[in-house]
Image 1 (cartoon, rainbow, N blue to C red):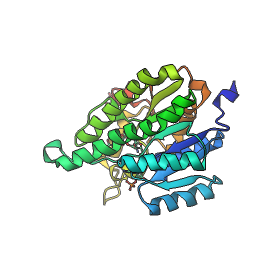
Image 2 (tube, rainbow, N blue to C red; image 1 turned 30 degrees about the vertical axis):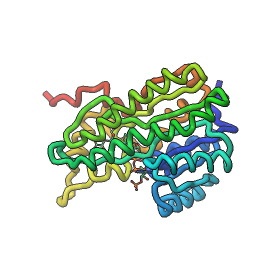
Image 3 (cartoon, protein in one colour; image 1 turned 45 degrees about the vertical axis):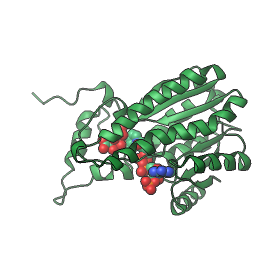
Length: 266
Ligand code: NAP
Ligand code: GCO
């Protein structure tokens, strides 16, 4: 049974994976046997990522590609398939967030978040699907969010994108499940990465950020997640072990979505 979780002989592309969640997931897929390819938006980030993978003993291949540029995405996928063979596993991880009250948000900022977090996963999936269809099999994992299910002040564009990403996941399942292609979402809870650093910064007096305390009160695990908490779920969704799981959003959130929040002490 454990062999079902092996990724030996598989090639994975993890987008935006020079750091953070993408880097942790790529490292985990490598430990399960996958060949790792990744991209990031700048040569500097790709170089940083390559150094980090090397330090972890992983010979990853890195590509500079803005995932919102369809021509660049198509060229990157063609390069990867020449350099490392067909892409068996795609993790649509690259993402941004802009935290601002909706009535103050510029249209361009709203559009940018939708472009990176929703349109780009569509374009990268569209670029890898022909190869997966030709080989009658593949795994697509879209990195969703608590905001795929819940709203919160100041993250309207992000929630709209991640909610759409949930339904894009289900749409890919519906259209390509018959070709042995499984497309699932992985929904992290609140994870300690550069993206959430502003929500965890201590106050000048050394007291916790109010949002930090808020998240702890909403998380049964009573802690922020670490990127490594997502590795097991990612390996499951990338492996044969999940061949009959499709269109599912697997939440690795420490219990947030199941919990009303810590009740006041009597
Ligand atoms: P992160 O540390 O900001 O990493 C995201 C990576 O994607 C960065 O290297 C970023 O580069 C890159 N990127 C952004 N726009 C890109 C583009 N157009 N083309 C290529 N690469 C691009 O974020 P993270 O916390 O690891 O999050 C990774 C994913 O998990 C995102 O989809 C995020 O929405 C999702 N997520 C995060 C959390 C959390 O609590 N951290 C929870 C749920 C879901 P730049 O640094 O230049 O932007
Ligand atoms: C925020 C956070 C969240 C997390 C994540 C939660 O501002 O609320 O950045 O959006 O990034 O998406 O699952």
